[in-house]
Structure formats: C-alpha cells, structure tokens
Amino acid sequence: MKTSTRKGIVQAVGFFALRAAMGLVLAILILFLYDIGKKGGGAISWEFLTQAPRRGMTEGGILPAIVGTFLVTLITAVLSVPLGMSAAIYLHEYARQSRLTRFIRLSIRNLSGVPSIVYGLFGVILFVNVMRFGTSILSAGLTLGLMTLPWTITASEEALKTIPDSYREGALALGATKWQTIRTNVLPYAVPGMLTGTVLGLARAAGETAPILFTGAAFFLPFLPKSPRDQFMALPYHLYIMATQHHAIQQVRPLAYGTALVLILLVLGMNMTAVVLRYRLRRKQR
Amino acid sequence: MQKRTRRRLKEAAIRAFFSACGLLAVLVLAGIFLTLVATALPAFREIKLSEFILKTNWDPTSPEKAEYGILSMVVSTLMVTGGALLLAVPIGIAVAAYLSDVAHWRVREILKPVVEVLAGIPSVVIGFLGIVLIGPFLARIFHTGNGLNALNGSVLLAIMALPTIISISEDSLNAVPKAYNEASLALGASRWQTLLRVKLPAGLSGIIAATMLGMGRAIGETMTVLMATGNARAFPHGFLDSVRTMTSGIAIELGEVPYYTTHYYALFAIGLVLFVITFAVNLVADVVLRKYQERER
Image 1 (cartoon, rainbow over the protein chains, first blue to last red):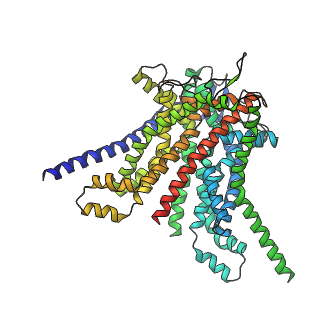
Image 2: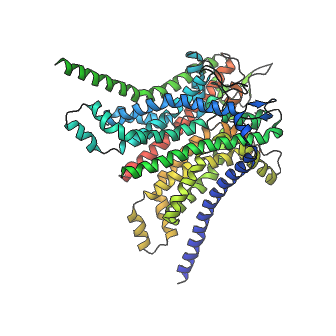
Image 3: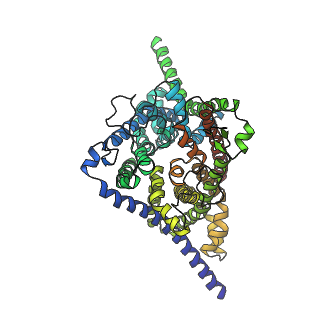
C-alpha cells in the first residue's frame, strides 16, 4: 500500500514537471508573439506599408523592403520549384533503389543541414563573381533557391508518394509510355501537394537574412528595384539594420518592431496557407 | 516505325532531363564544398595552418601584424551551442514525453502545430527579441550591462532548436512498440516508471539524433548570434562574456573586406571549417536516425 502511494506521488510530480515544460514552451511563444504584436501593431499604419523610409530611415515606411522580399522570393521559387519537382520525379518515378539514389538522398539531407551563411558564401562566388550577376536580386534569389532546393525535393517526393500505384499501372497497362503515365495520371494529382510543401520552404526563404547579406540586399534604397540586376531592400535585412546598425537605434525601435511584425505575419501567413491547403487536399483525396 | 523511334527518343530525352535534375543535389553539395576549398586555399599562402587553428587572436586589419587565429571563434561557437543544448535537450525531451504520454490526443493535435509556429519564426526576429526582450531580462538577473552575451545566444538558440528536438523525439517515443509499454504496465509499473525506464531508453537513438540535428542547426545559425551575443573578439571565459562565433565573424567582416585579399580568403576558410563541422554532425545524426528507423521495420 505504502509503495503504491509513493509511486503515485512520484508519478504525479513527474507528470507535473512534463506539463511545466510544455507550459514553459507555450509561455515563451506567447510572450514572443505578444511582445511583437503589441509593439509592432502600434507602428503599423497605411503609411508604414505604402511608403519608402525617409529622413535617414527614422520616418516613413517599409514598402521597398516588402516589395524586395516579394521579388526575391519569386526568383527563389522560379529556380527551386521546377528543379525540385523534377528531382523528386526522378527519385520517385524513374530511379530504382540503388547505391546512386541512396547517395543522392544522403546529399539532399546533408544539403538541408548546410548553414545558411555558407550558402551566402557560395552565392558570392558562383552568382556574384563567376556568373557576373553582381550583388542583385537575381544573385540573392538564386542563392535562396539553392538553399530551398532540398526542402522542395523532399516535399515534392512526399506528394508523389501519396499517389497510389494503381494510377500508374492503369496507364501503363493501356500502353502509355512512362512520361505519358506521369503526365496524365500522376502529376495532375500530385502537383497541388507538391506546391503546398514548396510554400513552406519559400516561407522560410522569405525570412532568411544570412544568404542575402552579401549577394544583393541593400542598406537603403529610396526607389523600388527596376530590373533583376538591381540591389534591393528586404524585410529581414531591414529588421537587422534597424535593430543593430542604425545610428539612432532607440528612436527607430518602433519601426523595427513594425518590420518584425510584418515579417512574422508574412512568414506565418505563408505557413498557415500551406497547412490549410494541405488539410483541404487530404480531405479531398479521401 | 519511324514514329516509334521518335517516341522512344523523346522518352529517353525526358528521362535524361529528370535524371540530371536528380543529380543536382549531389552537384550543389559538391559545388559548395569545392568552392569553399578553392577560395579558402589561397589564404594559406600567408597564414600557417597551425596558427589558423590554434591561435586565439583574430585581427586581420591590424596595422602592425595581421593575425588569423580562429580558436576564439570556434570556442565561442561551441560554447553557445553547448549551452543551447543543455537548455533545449531536457526541456525538449520533457515536452516530447508530455505530448506522447500525458496529453489527451485532442490536446496533442492542437499543441503540435502550435510548437511548429515557433519553428516558423525567422531567425532575425529571434535575434531581435534577444536584444529587446531576453537580453535585458538576463542582464537584470545577472547584473550585467546589456545582456548581449553567450548566455543570451544559448537561450535563443535553445528556443530555436526546441521544435526540431521535440518533434523528432516525440516520433521516436511513439515508435516504441506498444508491447513494451503494455508489458511494463502489466508488471505493475506506473506510467511514469514505464516512461522513464522503458520508453525513453527504447527511443534513445531517436532522441540522440534529434539532439545532433539541433546541434547542427545551432552551430550554423547566424543572425541570432550575430545580433544577440555582443560580438567581442576576445577569448570567452564564461557565459556572461560577449562572444563572436564563426558565423558572426563571417557575417560582420565579409561586407567590408576587399575582394581577393588574404583576409577575404581567410573568411572563406572559416566557412569551410563551419561546413566541415556541420557536415560531420549531420552525418552522424543521419546514421543514428537511419539505424533506428531500420530497426523499427
């Protein structure tokens, strides 16, 4: 009797500790979102979202940074999405399990562990110097595109895995070639899922700073970029500048909070969209 | 007949295209490594390799004698990372255990995506919160200046590593066969005892892999440590010292350094060291993870 009461008490204390750990993590998340939401919310106005910074970035808005982040993410998508999907099609539809595919998969997993600043270094050499794109939206977008590639491949392959083999067998049995089968009986059902997974990767890319530090992001530009060869302002880089490099840091703190809120809303918004789309998709597939 | 050959050619071309895309990941990985090696090597025309690795002074712009020792940065990186893991691993395992063994499934379905939200916050925002929120909080507790020190970096990196550690640990706890759980309970062990003595040991390899993956992330993280650890170049003597990690070192100096100088090449050499360390850590994590997944099958 006595040991069983003790056992019960130990269990109660233990489970309490586990609950406390969960509570701590939730508290941190809520504290973060609350702080940024409250102080950033005060800074956001129509003017903040639609105007360029003024007076040495102590006034005005962040429009060039919003547009820059949008454009750079677009270039990221243009590189990463088709290549990532094609690589996934190779791995899942064409390749047989072999030493080569195991090696490719290992490379993909390792690529996703390469530090983002190392991608930045690679981008400086490959895109800025060797390909002579200079520091530009193009260089930054391509650098981010390479960084998101492993995520895009993995997400696309997951989507291909959900397509039942009977779809493929049906087409092959009717005499369709491999590519006809993929084009008519696999891709139409897999592409929505592929795109959903891709959006998650793009959201992460949109919030990245280290890879664009030296490949194209600019401290301050009074105008919007006109060509892919222009430098650009980006939300994450702008937040970094406003938080650490500005000459009047305390004065511009509200603007930094506002930038942080817009960035978080953008990234979490993209995440949320992907999650909702995926949920809908799964229901439809059932 | 001709139509058939043409069709076969087309199929072969399409197949070749997809194969090339499939090989892209290998090419990019090899490209990154070779580029780093090629750009780092010229640095060692002027710097002795032993000095680069073993000296603590990094002062490439010194007017008297430029010094290129990365040891302080390496130690700073390891310190901030180690501190982050000390905080994140116990909390992460506890949360994973809560989600897998204590929480009602409905609660779990809500809490899991909520934890994922934490993973979605960009690192530059976490760094910002380190400056305005966590740093000042730590400064008040430890009576230091502005709280921009190694401890601040560790706390922030721990928060960033938590989602990875939680989700992989939870998966590995859930993968422990139900029979283990039932056998333990049938022998009269409490749920707590079962968790502690049966499920955690059985899921250990997954938890180790999760820790390694979190470690790889923490070592390579740039913006958070750049913003929140103060970036002093001196050799760190404690967690309340301001530190400059390898990643911050690159981020601070690459923007100002003239191209094709020894200093420029040396920054790529730091990048190479960073690449090699994270590569090794991720590879070990991968091997551990595969092993345990194979065993589960």
